[in-house]
Image (spheres, rainbow, N blue to C red):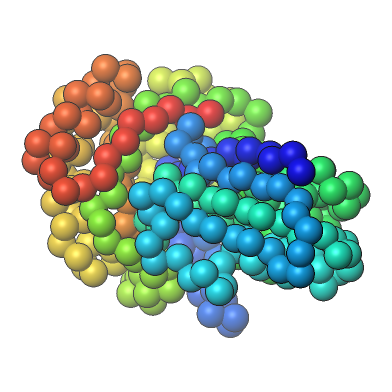
Length: 286
């Protein structure tokens, strides 16, 4: 059977405001999200047999639960809806996005596979049903269904932006796996809701100025969990050409937004010298 390749793109939270904690234990947030050209690779083909064959490879395959992960959850939910019938699949996921880094690798994998199966298997699920399935898998999965710059508004409603941010992004993963729940539980910073309407019309230079004055409320909690985060963010922000640096999501990956690609590549060389054991990549928003 024909094998299909899916690119599952990296999610980056440029900002993140924690508004309040809900009775469910989850949190109400506002966030500005972009996607960059770093991606996992998912290979899918239909097979004959009684069971799916799911394999993880690549640098960041370690630590993924082989019995319960976002890929398995997608297939399980679709089968509970009697949508895949007796179809079985071989799925190989090459993990290029660090696991437990706040870069949404697992969520992106689920969203990419869900979108692929809906299209190629002719499931005919509309946006409302797709989003409903995605929400059952994880809170970040609906965000990853569309690779567009997105504003997570109050009550976690999504506003998709048509404009491309054109950002030069340094991503550094300090080999720390952060559990999202633990970081949120440690967080003591809460922000008031704000309007991002002005962001929609801003030009690139004004966009950088706007983002520079924003923050990630979870950053202090992440730093308290491990001082390496503070050291890394301070180092990145002091490199020439860096507009701002902060964690993505709940961490532990740290990002730097640079004025041009040359400056970002130079920063990568400095990171490799200062922190030779850290994983580091330069990317562009898509």
